[in-house]
Length: 602
Image (cartoon, rainbow, N blue to C red; front, side, top):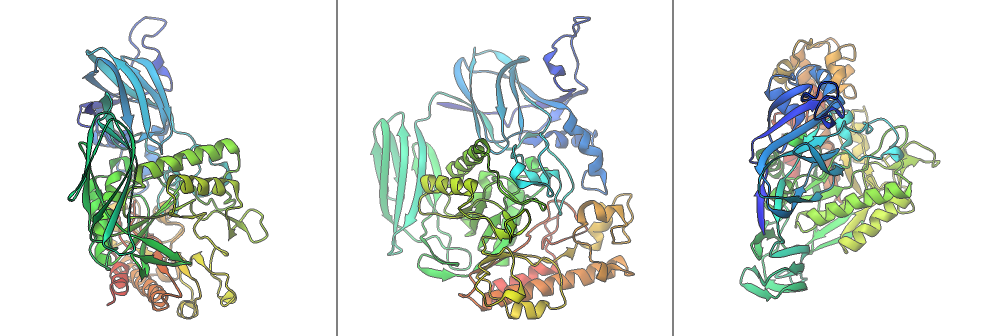
Protein backbone atom coordinates (compact mmCIF):
# COMPACT_ATOMS: atom_id res chain seq x y z
CA UNK A 1 0.00 0.00 0.00
CA UNK A 2 1.21 3.50 -0.79
CA UNK A 3 -0.30 6.81 0.24
CA UNK A 4 -0.06 10.11 -1.65
CA UNK A 5 -0.82 13.13 0.52
CA UNK A 6 -2.66 15.69 -1.58
CA UNK A 7 -2.57 18.52 0.95
CA UNK A 8 1.00 19.49 0.07
CA UNK A 9 0.39 19.92 -3.65
CA UNK A 10 0.04 23.19 -5.53
CA UNK A 11 -3.71 23.73 -5.67
CA UNK A 12 -5.70 26.42 -7.41
CA UNK A 13 -9.38 27.34 -7.28
CA UNK A 14 -11.59 29.04 -9.83
CA UNK A 15 -15.23 30.08 -9.79
CA UNK A 16 -17.87 29.20 -12.37
CA UNK A 17 -21.41 30.27 -12.99
CA UNK A 18 -23.34 27.16 -11.94
CA UNK A 19 -22.70 24.27 -14.33
CA UNK A 20 -20.75 26.38 -16.79
CA UNK A 21 -17.76 24.11 -16.15
CA UNK A 22 -19.69 21.39 -18.00
CA UNK A 23 -19.13 23.34 -21.18
CA UNK A 24 -15.52 22.61 -21.90
CA UNK A 25 -16.08 24.57 -25.08
CA UNK A 26 -18.68 27.18 -25.97
CA UNK A 27 -21.18 25.69 -28.43
CA UNK A 28 -21.35 28.78 -30.62
CA UNK A 29 -17.63 29.26 -31.19
CA UNK A 30 -15.89 26.02 -30.10
CA UNK A 31 -13.54 28.16 -28.05
CA UNK A 32 -12.61 27.27 -24.48
CA UNK A 33 -15.18 28.31 -21.90
CA UNK A 34 -13.59 30.37 -19.11
CA UNK A 35 -14.48 30.56 -15.43
CA UNK A 36 -16.09 33.67 -13.98
CA UNK A 37 -13.38 33.92 -11.34
CA UNK A 38 -9.94 33.17 -12.77
CA UNK A 39 -7.72 30.61 -11.01
CA UNK A 40 -5.96 31.71 -7.82
CA UNK A 41 -3.72 29.76 -5.42
CA UNK A 42 -5.56 27.75 -2.76
CA UNK A 43 -4.63 25.83 0.37
CA UNK A 44 -5.84 22.33 1.16
CA UNK A 45 -7.38 22.04 3.67
CA UNK A 46 -8.88 25.43 3.03
CA UNK A 47 -11.94 27.32 1.90
CA UNK A 48 -12.78 29.24 -1.23
CA UNK A 49 -13.25 32.32 0.92
CA UNK A 50 -9.76 32.07 2.41
CA UNK A 51 -8.25 31.77 -1.07
CA UNK A 52 -10.22 34.77 -2.32
CA UNK A 53 -9.24 36.84 0.69
CA UNK A 54 -5.56 35.96 0.24
CA UNK A 55 -5.84 37.01 -3.40
CA UNK A 56 -7.41 40.35 -2.48
CA UNK A 57 -10.80 39.43 -3.93
CA UNK A 58 -12.71 39.32 -0.64
CA UNK A 59 -12.58 41.69 2.32
CA UNK A 60 -11.78 40.55 5.85
CA UNK A 61 -15.15 39.20 6.96
CA UNK A 62 -14.24 39.73 10.62
CA UNK A 63 -14.22 43.51 10.24
CA UNK A 64 -17.36 45.59 10.66
CA UNK A 65 -20.19 44.20 8.55
CA UNK A 66 -17.93 43.04 5.72
CA UNK A 67 -19.15 39.46 6.01
CA UNK A 68 -22.17 40.73 4.04
CA UNK A 69 -19.82 41.40 1.12
CA UNK A 70 -18.78 37.72 1.08
CA UNK A 71 -22.18 36.11 0.62
CA UNK A 72 -21.93 36.14 -3.19
CA UNK A 73 -19.44 33.27 -2.96
CA UNK A 74 -22.32 30.91 -2.18
CA UNK A 75 -23.82 31.50 -5.64
CA UNK A 76 -20.98 30.01 -7.72
CA UNK A 77 -19.58 26.57 -8.42
CA UNK A 78 -15.97 26.36 -7.25
CA UNK A 79 -13.33 24.09 -8.73
CA UNK A 80 -10.24 23.14 -6.73
CA UNK A 81 -7.68 21.60 -9.08
CA UNK A 82 -4.10 20.39 -9.20
CA UNK A 83 -1.92 18.43 -11.59
CA UNK A 84 -0.36 15.15 -10.52
CA UNK A 85 0.58 11.73 -11.84
CA UNK A 86 -2.30 9.43 -11.04
CA UNK A 87 -1.36 5.88 -10.06
CA UNK A 88 -1.63 3.21 -12.72
CA UNK A 89 -4.61 0.98 -12.05
CA UNK A 90 -7.20 1.25 -9.27
CA UNK A 91 -6.74 3.59 -6.32
CA UNK A 92 -8.94 5.39 -3.81
CA UNK A 93 -9.40 9.09 -3.13
CA UNK A 94 -9.92 9.51 0.62
CA UNK A 95 -11.47 12.77 1.82
CA UNK A 96 -12.39 13.51 5.42
CA UNK A 97 -14.05 16.85 4.74
CA UNK A 98 -15.68 17.85 1.45
CA UNK A 99 -18.00 20.77 2.10
CA UNK A 100 -20.64 20.06 0.87
CA UNK A 101 -21.76 18.53 -2.48
CA UNK A 102 -20.08 18.18 -5.84
CA UNK A 103 -18.14 16.19 -8.37
CA UNK A 104 -14.69 14.67 -8.89
CA UNK A 105 -13.26 15.47 -12.32
CA UNK A 106 -10.23 14.14 -14.18
CA UNK A 107 -9.19 16.35 -17.08
CA UNK A 108 -12.58 18.05 -16.92
CA UNK A 109 -14.61 14.83 -17.09
CA UNK A 110 -16.87 13.77 -14.22
CA UNK A 111 -15.77 10.49 -12.67
CA UNK A 112 -17.60 10.56 -9.31
CA UNK A 113 -20.01 12.56 -7.13
CA UNK A 114 -20.12 13.24 -3.40
CA UNK A 115 -22.46 14.80 -0.86
CA UNK A 116 -22.21 15.50 2.84
CA UNK A 117 -19.93 17.77 4.88
CA UNK A 118 -19.93 15.61 8.00
CA UNK A 119 -18.96 12.17 6.67
CA UNK A 120 -15.86 10.71 5.09
CA UNK A 121 -15.75 10.01 1.37
CA UNK A 122 -13.81 7.06 -0.06
CA UNK A 123 -13.99 7.34 -3.84
CA UNK A 124 -12.63 4.51 -6.06
CA UNK A 125 -10.83 5.72 -9.18
CA UNK A 126 -8.56 4.32 -11.88
CA UNK A 127 -5.41 5.92 -13.31
CA UNK A 128 -2.85 5.26 -16.03
CA UNK A 129 0.38 6.42 -14.42
CA UNK A 130 0.36 9.72 -16.35
CA UNK A 131 -0.08 13.37 -15.30
CA UNK A 132 -3.67 14.57 -15.13
CA UNK A 133 -5.68 17.50 -13.83
CA UNK A 134 -7.56 16.31 -10.74
CA UNK A 135 -10.47 18.59 -9.81
CA UNK A 136 -12.92 18.72 -6.93
CA UNK A 137 -15.83 20.88 -8.04
CA UNK A 138 -18.32 22.13 -5.44
CA UNK A 139 -21.96 22.83 -6.07
CA UNK A 140 -23.65 25.85 -4.50
CA UNK A 141 -24.20 25.20 -0.77
CA UNK A 142 -27.58 23.91 0.31
CA UNK A 143 -29.77 26.36 2.19
CA UNK A 144 -29.45 24.90 5.67
CA UNK A 145 -31.13 26.58 8.63
CA UNK A 146 -29.40 29.07 10.87
CA UNK A 147 -30.30 29.55 14.50
CA UNK A 148 -33.96 30.34 13.92
CA UNK A 149 -36.07 27.86 12.00
CA UNK A 150 -37.53 24.38 12.32
CA UNK A 151 -35.26 21.61 13.58
CA UNK A 152 -37.41 18.79 12.22
CA UNK A 153 -36.85 20.18 8.69
CA UNK A 154 -33.07 19.73 8.81
CA UNK A 155 -32.07 17.80 5.71
CA UNK A 156 -28.54 18.62 4.61
CA UNK A 157 -26.47 18.63 7.82
CA UNK A 158 -24.02 21.20 6.63
CA UNK A 159 -22.85 22.93 9.86
CA UNK A 160 -25.73 25.15 10.90
CA UNK A 161 -23.83 27.82 12.81
CA UNK A 162 -22.39 29.09 9.51
CA UNK A 163 -25.87 30.19 8.46
CA UNK A 164 -26.00 32.67 11.34
CA UNK A 165 -26.13 32.22 15.12
CA UNK A 166 -26.28 34.53 18.09
CA UNK A 167 -22.47 34.60 18.17
CA UNK A 168 -21.59 34.86 14.47
CA UNK A 169 -23.04 36.29 11.26
CA UNK A 170 -23.85 34.25 8.19
CA UNK A 171 -20.64 32.95 6.63
CA UNK A 172 -21.01 29.75 4.60
CA UNK A 173 -17.62 28.28 3.69
CA UNK A 174 -17.08 26.12 0.64
CA UNK A 175 -14.08 23.85 0.22
CA UNK A 176 -11.94 21.08 1.65
CA UNK A 177 -12.03 21.05 5.43
CA UNK A 178 -9.84 18.10 6.42
CA UNK A 179 -7.31 15.53 5.22
CA UNK A 180 -7.14 14.45 1.58
CA UNK A 181 -5.05 11.65 0.09
CA UNK A 182 -4.80 8.91 -2.51
CA UNK A 183 -4.26 5.31 -1.46
CA UNK A 184 -3.00 2.55 -3.72
CA UNK A 185 -3.58 -1.01 -2.58
CA UNK A 186 -4.71 -2.26 0.79
CA UNK A 187 -2.87 -1.33 3.99
CA UNK A 188 -1.04 -4.03 5.90
CA UNK A 189 -3.71 -3.86 8.60
CA UNK A 190 -7.10 -2.13 8.77
CA UNK A 191 -8.34 -1.24 12.25
CA UNK A 192 -12.09 -1.86 12.24
CA UNK A 193 -12.63 -1.05 15.91
CA UNK A 194 -10.37 -0.12 18.81
CA UNK A 195 -11.44 0.34 22.43
CA UNK A 196 -9.55 0.45 25.70
CA UNK A 197 -10.63 0.20 29.31
CA UNK A 198 -9.19 0.05 32.78
CA UNK A 199 -9.86 -2.92 35.03
CA UNK A 200 -11.26 -2.44 38.54
CA UNK A 201 -7.79 -2.82 40.04
CA UNK A 202 -6.74 0.46 38.33
CA UNK A 203 -3.49 -1.18 37.24
CA UNK A 204 -4.59 -3.45 34.37
CA UNK A 205 -5.25 -2.00 30.95
CA UNK A 206 -7.37 -3.86 28.41
CA UNK A 207 -7.09 -3.32 24.65
CA UNK A 208 -9.87 -4.72 22.47
CA UNK A 209 -8.98 -4.61 18.80
CA UNK A 210 -10.89 -5.73 15.73
CA UNK A 211 -8.41 -5.75 12.88
CA UNK A 212 -8.25 -7.03 9.32
CA UNK A 213 -4.72 -8.11 8.41
CA UNK A 214 -3.94 -8.10 4.72
CA UNK A 215 -0.46 -9.40 5.50
CA UNK A 216 1.16 -10.77 8.66
CA UNK A 217 1.00 -7.98 11.24
CA UNK A 218 2.47 -7.29 14.67
CA UNK A 219 0.46 -5.57 17.40
CA UNK A 220 2.55 -4.03 20.16
CA UNK A 221 1.91 -1.88 23.21
CA UNK A 222 4.49 -1.33 25.96
CA UNK A 223 6.07 -4.79 26.46
CA UNK A 224 3.09 -6.71 25.12
CA UNK A 225 3.30 -8.05 21.57
CA UNK A 226 0.98 -10.20 19.46
CA UNK A 227 1.75 -11.55 15.98
CA UNK A 228 -1.29 -11.88 13.71
CA UNK A 229 -1.56 -13.87 10.46
CA UNK A 230 -3.51 -12.76 7.41
CA UNK A 231 -7.23 -12.57 8.16
CA UNK A 232 -9.72 -10.83 10.43
CA UNK A 233 -9.08 -10.95 14.17
CA UNK A 234 -10.63 -9.92 17.46
CA UNK A 235 -7.71 -9.32 19.80
CA UNK A 236 -7.72 -8.69 23.55
CA UNK A 237 -4.52 -7.57 25.24
CA UNK A 238 -4.02 -7.08 28.99
CA UNK A 239 -1.03 -5.24 30.37
CA UNK A 240 0.07 -3.32 33.49
CA UNK A 241 -0.67 0.38 33.08
CA UNK A 242 -1.01 3.69 34.84
CA UNK A 243 -4.56 5.07 34.61
CA UNK A 244 -5.52 8.02 32.45
CA UNK A 245 -6.85 10.73 34.73
CA UNK A 246 -8.85 13.85 33.87
CA UNK A 247 -7.19 17.21 34.34
CA UNK A 248 -6.68 18.03 38.02
CA UNK A 249 -7.15 14.44 39.20
CA UNK A 250 -3.85 12.97 38.06
CA UNK A 251 -1.67 12.34 35.03
CA UNK A 252 -3.22 11.85 31.59
CA UNK A 253 -1.04 8.80 30.84
CA UNK A 254 -0.93 7.64 27.23
CA UNK A 255 0.68 4.61 25.57
CA UNK A 256 1.60 4.04 21.93
CA UNK A 257 -0.27 1.14 20.36
CA UNK A 258 1.43 -0.05 17.19
CA UNK A 259 -0.63 -1.99 14.64
CA UNK A 260 1.63 -2.77 11.74
CA UNK A 261 3.01 0.60 10.62
CA UNK A 262 0.30 2.65 12.36
CA UNK A 263 0.84 4.15 15.82
CA UNK A 264 -2.20 5.19 17.87
CA UNK A 265 -1.85 6.87 21.29
CA UNK A 266 -4.27 5.24 23.74
CA UNK A 267 -5.12 5.60 27.40
CA UNK A 268 -6.99 3.57 29.97
CA UNK A 269 -9.88 4.79 32.11
CA UNK A 270 -13.04 3.40 33.69
CA UNK A 271 -16.25 5.43 33.85
CA UNK A 272 -19.34 4.80 35.93
CA UNK A 273 -22.35 7.10 36.28
CA UNK A 274 -24.39 7.44 39.44
CA UNK A 275 -27.24 9.47 37.94
CA UNK A 276 -25.43 12.78 37.28
CA UNK A 277 -22.27 12.08 39.24
CA UNK A 278 -19.44 10.76 37.11
CA UNK A 279 -16.89 8.36 38.59
CA UNK A 280 -13.59 8.04 36.75
CA UNK A 281 -11.36 5.17 37.82
CA UNK A 282 -13.52 4.73 40.92
CA UNK A 283 -13.28 8.36 42.00
CA UNK A 284 -16.32 10.70 41.88
CA UNK A 285 -15.36 13.87 40.00
CA UNK A 286 -17.07 17.22 39.67
CA UNK A 287 -17.22 17.81 35.93
CA UNK A 288 -16.28 21.39 35.12
CA UNK A 289 -15.56 23.09 31.85
CA UNK A 290 -17.05 24.89 28.88
CA UNK A 291 -19.14 24.33 25.83
CA UNK A 292 -16.84 24.02 22.83
CA UNK A 293 -18.01 25.75 19.68
CA UNK A 294 -16.02 26.06 16.42
CA UNK A 295 -12.71 27.90 16.53
CA UNK A 296 -13.49 30.02 13.46
CA UNK A 297 -16.43 30.72 11.18
CA UNK A 298 -14.07 29.57 8.41
CA UNK A 299 -13.47 26.22 10.07
CA UNK A 300 -11.61 24.88 7.04
CA UNK A 301 -8.71 27.17 7.97
CA UNK A 302 -8.28 26.08 11.60
CA UNK A 303 -4.74 24.88 12.35
CA UNK A 304 -3.33 22.47 14.90
CA UNK A 305 -1.78 25.50 16.60
CA UNK A 306 -5.25 27.06 16.94
CA UNK A 307 -6.53 23.92 18.67
CA UNK A 308 -3.47 23.65 20.88
CA UNK A 309 -3.67 27.27 22.05
CA UNK A 310 -7.30 26.96 23.16
CA UNK A 311 -7.00 23.51 24.73
CA UNK A 312 -4.00 24.66 26.74
CA UNK A 313 -6.04 27.64 27.96
CA UNK A 314 -8.82 25.30 29.07
CA UNK A 315 -6.37 22.95 30.75
CA UNK A 316 -4.84 25.87 32.65
CA UNK A 317 -8.32 27.08 33.55
CA UNK A 318 -8.94 23.78 35.33
CA UNK A 319 -11.44 22.34 32.85
CA UNK A 320 -11.87 18.58 32.79
CA UNK A 321 -14.75 18.48 30.27
CA UNK A 322 -15.61 20.09 26.93
CA UNK A 323 -19.08 19.68 25.45
CA UNK A 324 -18.77 19.73 21.64
CA UNK A 325 -22.01 21.44 20.66
CA UNK A 326 -24.43 19.87 18.19
CA UNK A 327 -24.86 22.79 15.79
CA UNK A 328 -21.41 22.32 14.31
CA UNK A 329 -19.42 19.23 13.23
CA UNK A 330 -16.99 16.54 14.27
CA UNK A 331 -13.75 18.34 15.10
CA UNK A 332 -10.56 17.14 13.46
CA UNK A 333 -8.54 14.25 14.81
CA UNK A 334 -5.95 16.56 16.36
CA UNK A 335 -8.59 18.15 18.62
CA UNK A 336 -9.34 14.80 20.25
CA UNK A 337 -5.66 13.86 20.42
CA UNK A 338 -4.89 17.13 22.20
CA UNK A 339 -7.76 16.50 24.63
CA UNK A 340 -6.29 13.04 25.30
CA UNK A 341 -2.97 14.66 26.12
CA UNK A 342 -4.49 17.43 28.26
CA UNK A 343 -6.71 15.14 30.32
CA UNK A 344 -9.88 16.83 29.11
CA UNK A 345 -12.97 14.68 28.64
CA UNK A 346 -15.16 15.21 25.57
CA UNK A 347 -18.96 15.18 25.47
CA UNK A 348 -19.63 14.79 21.74
CA UNK A 349 -22.96 15.72 20.23
CA UNK A 350 -24.39 14.56 16.93
CA UNK A 351 -25.37 17.26 14.39
CA UNK A 352 -28.82 18.27 15.62
CA UNK A 353 -29.75 21.53 17.29
CA UNK A 354 -32.67 23.64 18.40
CA UNK A 355 -34.16 26.33 16.17
CA UNK A 356 -36.35 28.52 18.38
CA UNK A 357 -39.88 28.32 16.96
CA UNK A 358 -39.68 24.51 16.59
CA UNK A 359 -37.00 22.35 18.21
CA UNK A 360 -38.13 18.85 17.30
CA UNK A 361 -35.75 16.31 15.77
CA UNK A 362 -36.48 14.96 12.26
CA UNK A 363 -39.05 12.18 12.04
CA UNK A 364 -38.85 11.08 8.39
CA UNK A 365 -37.25 7.60 8.14
CA UNK A 366 -34.89 8.60 5.32
CA UNK A 367 -33.59 11.60 7.29
CA UNK A 368 -33.25 9.53 10.48
CA UNK A 369 -31.20 7.02 8.49
CA UNK A 370 -29.00 9.87 7.24
CA UNK A 371 -28.43 11.19 10.78
CA UNK A 372 -27.60 7.67 11.98
CA UNK A 373 -25.07 7.30 9.17
CA UNK A 374 -23.34 10.48 10.32
CA UNK A 375 -23.39 9.24 13.92
CA UNK A 376 -21.81 5.91 12.94
CA UNK A 377 -19.08 7.75 11.09
CA UNK A 378 -18.44 9.98 14.11
CA UNK A 379 -18.09 6.93 16.35
CA UNK A 380 -15.88 5.02 13.91
CA UNK A 381 -13.52 8.00 13.61
CA UNK A 382 -13.29 9.15 17.24
CA UNK A 383 -14.59 6.32 19.41
CA UNK A 384 -11.12 5.05 20.36
CA UNK A 385 -10.06 8.27 22.10
CA UNK A 386 -9.63 7.98 25.86
CA UNK A 387 -10.97 11.54 26.23
CA UNK A 388 -14.39 10.44 24.95
CA UNK A 389 -16.93 10.55 27.78
CA UNK A 390 -20.36 10.28 26.15
CA UNK A 391 -22.40 10.74 22.98
CA UNK A 392 -25.43 13.02 22.77
CA UNK A 393 -28.25 13.27 20.24
CA UNK A 394 -28.00 17.04 19.93
CA UNK A 395 -28.49 20.45 21.44
CA UNK A 396 -31.73 21.60 23.05
CA UNK A 397 -34.14 19.29 21.21
CA UNK A 398 -37.49 19.87 22.89
CA UNK A 399 -41.16 20.76 22.76
CA UNK A 400 -43.29 23.01 24.92
CA UNK A 401 -44.52 21.59 28.21
CA UNK A 402 -47.86 20.86 26.54
CA UNK A 403 -45.93 18.99 23.81
CA UNK A 404 -46.63 21.58 21.11
CA UNK A 405 -43.80 23.34 19.23
CA UNK A 406 -41.68 25.40 21.58
CA UNK A 407 -39.38 24.75 24.51
CA UNK A 408 -39.45 23.51 28.06
CA UNK A 409 -39.77 19.72 27.68
CA UNK A 410 -36.62 17.96 26.38
CA UNK A 411 -37.12 15.10 23.93
CA UNK A 412 -36.38 11.59 25.15
CA UNK A 413 -35.97 8.09 23.74
CA UNK A 414 -39.62 7.93 22.73
CA UNK A 415 -38.66 10.14 19.78
CA UNK A 416 -37.85 7.93 16.74
CA UNK A 417 -34.70 9.80 15.74
CA UNK A 418 -33.19 9.80 19.22
CA UNK A 419 -34.17 6.17 19.78
CA UNK A 420 -32.39 5.28 16.53
CA UNK A 421 -29.27 7.17 17.64
CA UNK A 422 -29.39 5.33 20.96
CA UNK A 423 -29.33 2.03 19.06
CA UNK A 424 -26.38 3.21 16.97
CA UNK A 425 -24.36 4.01 20.09
CA UNK A 426 -25.33 0.68 21.71
CA UNK A 427 -24.15 -1.18 18.60
CA UNK A 428 -21.01 0.82 17.82
CA UNK A 429 -19.81 1.85 21.29
CA UNK A 430 -21.48 -0.41 23.87
CA UNK A 431 -21.23 0.67 27.47
CA UNK A 432 -20.75 4.37 26.66
CA UNK A 433 -23.45 6.73 27.88
CA UNK A 434 -25.87 8.23 25.38
CA UNK A 435 -28.00 11.28 26.18
CA UNK A 436 -30.98 12.00 23.90
CA UNK A 437 -30.30 15.73 24.10
CA UNK A 438 -28.88 18.44 26.29
CA UNK A 439 -30.52 19.70 28.41
CA UNK A 440 -31.97 16.23 29.04
CA UNK A 441 -34.67 17.20 31.47
CA UNK A 442 -37.16 16.48 32.78
CA UNK A 443 -37.26 20.27 32.38
CA UNK A 444 -35.15 22.25 29.93
CA UNK A 445 -34.24 25.00 32.38
CA UNK A 446 -34.44 25.43 36.15
CA UNK A 447 -37.18 27.71 37.39
CA UNK A 448 -36.70 28.93 40.95
CA UNK A 449 -40.45 28.52 41.52
CA UNK A 450 -40.02 24.78 40.99
CA UNK A 451 -37.00 24.17 43.21
CA UNK A 452 -37.50 21.14 45.44
CA UNK A 453 -39.87 19.33 43.04
CA UNK A 454 -37.28 17.01 41.42
CA UNK A 455 -37.72 18.58 37.98
CA UNK A 456 -34.19 19.86 37.44
CA UNK A 457 -31.67 17.22 36.41
CA UNK A 458 -29.50 18.28 33.43
CA UNK A 459 -30.60 21.84 32.68
CA UNK A 460 -29.56 24.81 30.56
CA UNK A 461 -29.54 28.50 31.47
CA UNK A 462 -29.73 31.14 32.60
CA UNK A 463 -27.67 33.19 30.14
CA UNK A 464 -28.21 36.72 31.29
CA UNK A 465 -28.28 38.88 34.35
CA UNK A 466 -31.19 39.06 36.78
CA UNK A 467 -31.50 41.00 40.01
CA UNK A 468 -31.99 37.80 42.04
CA UNK A 469 -28.84 36.09 40.68
CA UNK A 470 -27.28 35.35 44.08
CA UNK A 471 -30.54 34.02 45.55
CA UNK A 472 -31.22 31.89 42.47
CA UNK A 473 -27.92 30.07 42.83
CA UNK A 474 -28.03 29.81 46.61
CA UNK A 475 -31.24 27.75 46.36
CA UNK A 476 -30.41 25.85 43.16
CA UNK A 477 -31.36 22.16 43.11
CA UNK A 478 -30.21 21.14 39.59
CA UNK A 479 -28.27 17.87 39.36
CA UNK A 480 -26.14 19.11 36.45
CA UNK A 481 -25.67 22.42 34.67
CA UNK A 482 -24.54 21.76 31.09
CA UNK A 483 -25.07 25.38 29.96
CA UNK A 484 -24.92 28.57 31.98
CA UNK A 485 -23.79 31.86 30.49
CA UNK A 486 -23.42 35.59 30.94
CA UNK A 487 -22.49 38.24 28.36
CA UNK A 488 -19.13 39.94 28.63
CA UNK A 489 -17.84 42.57 26.24
CA UNK A 490 -14.69 42.17 24.17
CA UNK A 491 -11.83 44.51 25.13
CA UNK A 492 -12.30 48.06 23.88
CA UNK A 493 -9.08 47.87 21.84
CA UNK A 494 -10.41 44.85 19.92
CA UNK A 495 -13.75 46.53 19.33
CA UNK A 496 -11.86 49.44 17.79
CA UNK A 497 -9.73 47.03 15.77
CA UNK A 498 -12.63 45.10 14.25
CA UNK A 499 -15.34 47.75 13.86
CA UNK A 500 -13.89 48.93 10.54
CA UNK A 501 -15.85 51.91 9.20
CA UNK A 502 -18.67 51.30 11.68
CA UNK A 503 -19.15 53.45 14.77
CA UNK A 504 -18.09 51.91 18.08
CA UNK A 505 -20.99 53.55 19.91
CA UNK A 506 -23.77 53.41 20.77
CA UNK A 507 -23.63 49.82 22.06
CA UNK A 508 -27.23 49.22 21.06
CA UNK A 509 -29.47 47.68 18.42
CA UNK A 510 -29.54 51.06 16.71
CA UNK A 511 -25.89 50.54 15.76
CA UNK A 512 -25.58 48.16 12.77
CA UNK A 513 -22.15 47.01 13.99
CA UNK A 514 -23.51 45.67 17.30
CA UNK A 515 -26.65 44.32 15.69
CA UNK A 516 -24.57 42.41 13.13
CA UNK A 517 -23.11 39.78 15.51
CA UNK A 518 -24.14 40.66 19.07
CA UNK A 519 -27.84 41.45 18.92
CA UNK A 520 -28.75 38.87 21.56
CA UNK A 521 -26.24 40.06 24.13
CA UNK A 522 -26.26 43.88 24.16
CA UNK A 523 -26.63 44.98 27.78
CA UNK A 524 -28.76 48.11 27.60
CA UNK A 525 -28.72 48.65 31.37
CA UNK A 526 -24.91 48.85 31.36
CA UNK A 527 -24.29 50.49 27.99
CA UNK A 528 -26.68 53.44 27.94
CA UNK A 529 -24.81 56.71 28.27
CA UNK A 530 -21.46 55.06 28.97
CA UNK A 531 -18.14 55.47 27.23
CA UNK A 532 -16.86 52.39 25.46
CA UNK A 533 -14.20 51.82 28.13
CA UNK A 534 -16.71 52.10 30.98
CA UNK A 535 -19.21 49.80 29.32
CA UNK A 536 -16.56 47.16 28.65
CA UNK A 537 -15.32 47.32 32.23
CA UNK A 538 -18.82 47.01 33.73
CA UNK A 539 -19.78 44.21 31.33
CA UNK A 540 -16.65 42.18 32.01
CA UNK A 541 -16.99 42.66 35.78
CA UNK A 542 -20.58 41.44 35.71
CA UNK A 543 -19.68 38.39 33.62
CA UNK A 544 -16.81 37.45 35.93
CA UNK A 545 -18.80 37.88 39.14
CA UNK A 546 -21.93 36.16 37.86
CA UNK A 547 -20.20 33.08 36.42
CA UNK A 548 -17.96 32.64 39.44
CA UNK A 549 -21.00 32.84 41.73
CA UNK A 550 -22.84 30.20 39.70
CA UNK A 551 -19.88 27.84 39.39
CA UNK A 552 -18.99 28.11 43.07
CA UNK A 553 -22.56 27.40 44.14
CA UNK A 554 -22.73 24.28 41.97
CA UNK A 555 -19.32 22.97 42.98
CA UNK A 556 -20.04 23.51 46.68
CA UNK A 557 -23.08 21.21 46.35
CA UNK A 558 -21.11 18.29 44.89
CA UNK A 559 -22.14 15.45 44.77
CA UNK A 560 -25.71 16.82 44.83
CA UNK A 561 -24.66 18.66 41.66
CA UNK A 562 -22.46 16.68 39.30
CA UNK A 563 -21.07 19.41 37.09
CA UNK A 564 -21.07 22.90 35.63
CA UNK A 565 -20.34 23.91 32.02
CA UNK A 566 -20.08 27.51 30.86
CA UNK A 567 -21.83 28.70 27.73
CA UNK A 568 -19.53 29.37 25.99
CA UNK A 569 -15.78 28.93 25.89
CA UNK A 570 -14.34 31.01 23.03
CA UNK A 571 -15.47 33.29 20.23
CA UNK A 572 -15.19 32.14 16.60
CA UNK A 573 -15.88 35.71 15.48
CA UNK A 574 -14.92 39.07 17.03
CA UNK A 575 -18.30 39.79 18.64
CA UNK A 576 -18.24 43.11 20.52
CA UNK A 577 -20.18 41.36 23.29
CA UNK A 578 -20.92 37.66 23.74
CA UNK A 579 -21.08 34.96 26.39
CA UNK A 580 -17.58 33.65 25.55
CA UNK A 581 -14.93 33.84 28.28
CA UNK A 582 -12.08 33.80 25.72
CA UNK A 583 -12.20 36.34 22.89
CA UNK A 584 -11.65 35.79 19.18
CA UNK A 585 -7.89 36.35 19.48
CA UNK A 586 -7.70 33.68 22.22
CA UNK A 587 -7.24 36.23 25.00
CA UNK A 588 -9.02 35.42 28.27
CA UNK A 589 -11.61 37.84 29.60
CA UNK A 590 -11.73 38.49 33.38
CA UNK A 591 -14.43 35.80 33.67
CA UNK A 592 -11.86 33.20 32.61
CA UNK A 593 -9.69 33.99 35.61
CA UNK A 594 -12.66 34.15 37.99
CA UNK A 595 -13.73 30.68 36.86
CA UNK A 596 -10.15 29.45 37.04
CA UNK A 597 -10.12 30.23 40.78
CA UNK A 598 -13.30 28.22 41.29
CA UNK A 599 -12.25 25.30 39.07
CA UNK A 600 -8.76 25.05 40.54
CA UNK A 601 -9.94 25.47 44.10
CA UNK A 602 -8.55 28.97 44.70
